Image 1 (cartoon, rainbow, N blue to C red):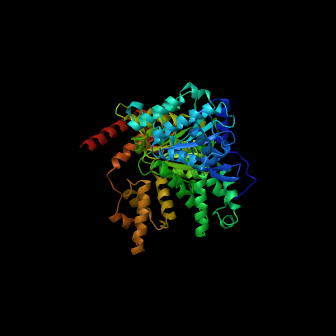
Image 2 (image 1 turned 90 degrees about the vertical axis):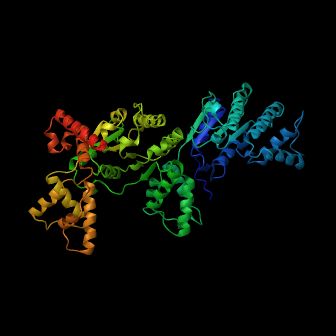
Image 3 (image 1 turned 90 degrees about the horizontal axis):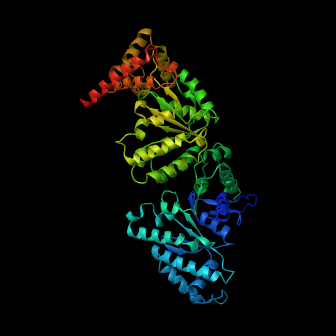
Length: 588
């Protein structure tokens, strides 16, 4: 798959050159998308990172790889240089005439350290020092580029005295090596490859001659180049089809690596099926689950505000909010959407994400990040999230999703994560790109630092009066159960029987009615309500939640009439009374 029209050098190579040559860094930690393919300008092909690094560096460096399995080479020429240095005594043996037997002896010595990672490091340091000594008299010997794969497994994070013995010894040996003045003065350098910064020991990351390069997932232009390149494949490209077109696919494929795209294309061609949006979303979520478990899920909403019944005042406000969030000078970082359970808060925000073209990232099971590798998981979370275009991050029941950084009962790992998220919310670099949607039935239990980053607070209530009638009528009409035959008395009975229903309860009622009509097409909605009703167990809790939402609402026009007639002091008093009552019932 040759293509001479693609000439862009991967940006991480430019960063590498700048850090090494201009800033004199000789330990460079490369993280992020290190397991993907990249454009190789020497072969006009996409290739794995280690091959791209090798071909970019080989003209000026001798390259050696090291990992938990030991020492390895991609080039016979590099292997030969190390073998000559290993075999030579006072004078460097010439490459010409170097015997195969001597080369085999070197290979055996390297092989003896296979999966002996500390011994391999000791051998590599010995070879490096000999290379430096011979290089002073032999100009043909080039400086070393030592590439450490999976550096976090060789030098894991943790206080050195608490690490397992072998990890501690490897870290201590490597740290002593790269902090020697002799190493700092030479032109040799290390490239540490690892998925995240947090997995690599902080002793190494803190060194003044260490620098980092974060490699992002492919942007839209890189994905376009890859797709165009694949389409020129005479065997596969002609058979590849995109549901919705190529441009739509490229836009929707944010978050996927080029390797995943290649597998997706080859599978689609093999099965003679077009690549669909559903396939894309499945691949994105599979990739996220591999790295983050079930913490987040990506959605691309296919509906807009027209799918929302009623809520006209909310629609006007959200139209304005999402429009202002397109401009840095007026954008906000977060919206706080409060209201009782089952009121449709999530659906409302998803609809406006669909209208605005924002990808929705739903945070789920966030507490699973609290224990274990909190820093690593948050680094991966942030890296993946910021890969997408403009996004809306939805957090359901935000008051339980992360704890307060101020509470003495909050676990330290939980505080760390909450602090990271609060910092991410407050990062002005993310304005416009990232909008947080915090949905909660208990905004009073949210951390104050979270609420302070949510200047727009919108409350969603159950519709009342004529709005409730209009909501029920339109909902049942859309579900194929028109209520045109109901008399005024029937409507009064329906409203009375559903007085405690939420929007979710009404959707459940439509399902019950449709199910009943499969058996008895003539059954009425009132007859259905004679044998089925929504549960009553949280009626008082929902009333309390409505009072709390009324206290967390930036827009008085959204309040139901009964709350607008109350003073602030009256709402507070009523809320406190309901709080005491619900707490008493729970205690009982």
